[in-house]
Image 1 (tube, rainbow, N blue to C red):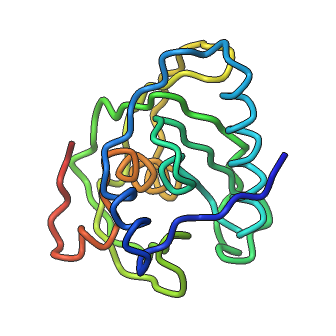
Image 2 (tube, rainbow, N blue to C red):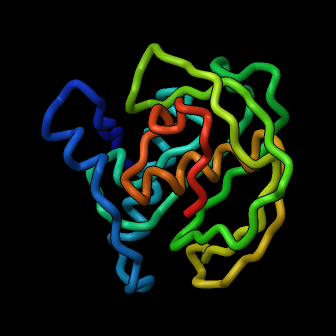
Length: 167
């Protein structure tokens, strides 16, 4: 496993890459996919993130890792077991919205209040290429929405106008 650099705003090349729409994963059998995921997990944990999307490390693929466990950046958050989402797609957004603070490893030292749907239903594949469909709420839903935004070239700061743009 390798600790990777997280692309950050302020770097013009990084900003260009973060604004691009990532491509779906088409080959689950390649060893490279497992290496990318392992490196993403190590990087997320090292920087005390609760989620990381592949575009944040310069990989234009629909891959998200997330986990909340004894995180110093989010000490009050409930634990969420490590999850790997490949080709995630949000199927349904709740009609209830909630505002909460968000930060991003690609926008260090900044947090903003962002309003998002309070629960979602999503589908994704895991590394074994099994499809998973789940409904999650609260912080868990917020993390997935934030990371799916990264896959679509959207940074959380683009939601600062108070309008949530459902994909």
